[in-house]
Amino acid sequence: MALAEIGVIVNIRFTSSLTDNDENAVAPALLKAVTSILDALPIAYVIRIDTSDSQVYQHSRPLDGSEGSEIRRDVLPVAHASLGIR
Image 1 (cartoon, helix red, strand yellow):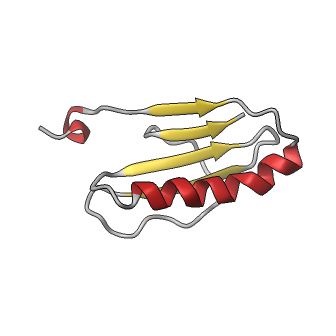
Image 2: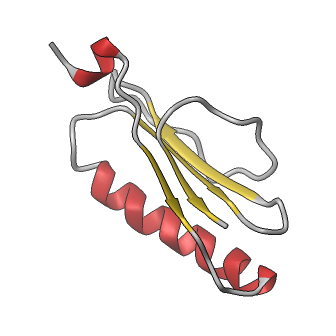
């Protein structure tokens, strides 16, 4: 049985000491790097980065392998795996 079928959710959080501006500069690059790693795996995922000034960067790929969403800002919270920088 696949982990997704039994509802396993992984939530990873990082605490940042960067300034708001630095977080907003680093977040898209971090999202791109993590996405390139996860895209090589046969998994569904959601990556969400919330910065300290409330900017949101998010990308997802559904289980069926179709294309995920683009980097977006100010999206609603998701209940899947997330990567947060605070």
